[in-house]
Length: 295
Image (cartoon, rainbow, N blue to C red; front, side):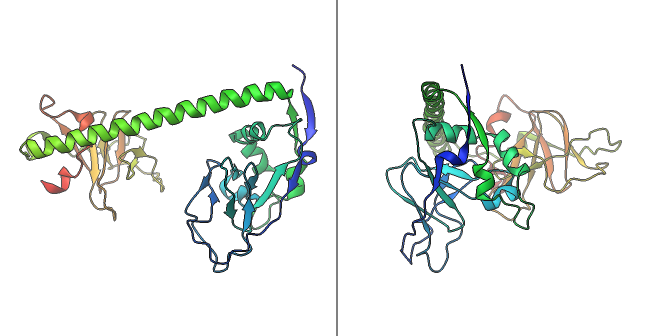
């Protein structure tokens, strides 16, 4: 398969049209996230939005000023039938010749961590650490024939559709499970969880465990934002145990079930293990997590 090398800017053209609407709300304005998708509502909206830019259908919007900060090229393709409105900080452009490069193929090409690193490496080193439009246009890409591009687009779109269908199925299943659990909570008597669990307070005295973890609001173990060089004396969480903390300033109990290798957590966490697994399954315990605060 022969590839042709082209300069990207030879097939791009900036689109400059302001919306002229001065009172757009955050729900009217779109932003572009790190997943290269438009999102609403926007995080910030100016007092006068009349200079906000229009992104027509099948046009791109990207924020070249944030590449260095996010190590990602924030770019999105408007696949809807309605125009979107974005901040003046965005660059709006379109393809001038789809007989050479398909817009969906270009988006797929730019939607990779490899290209993100390329753009990050070529940032201008300024305070904003962004990229000049000319540098963006000077990028050379190798293109397969247009019919091969279309095959890539079809395969990619098929994978995206399958993923969305899978996610919708998970959401439907979650609704069914949540409804069933709520029905059981109304029909069955509540019991204190203390009769099923046993607390543990094992400390990392010898410093043998070197993996430190925290817990997020999604009830998952994560790498803490602030790492500690000295993990001696930290509370140990063994595989098959729970760690939880009720001292966080939010509406959720930070609780997670350890399924991976042993780790240590901060002393603000408590650790316990389910003893009577014939009465309470560990993998299902985090669903009614509010029980920790109710009993």
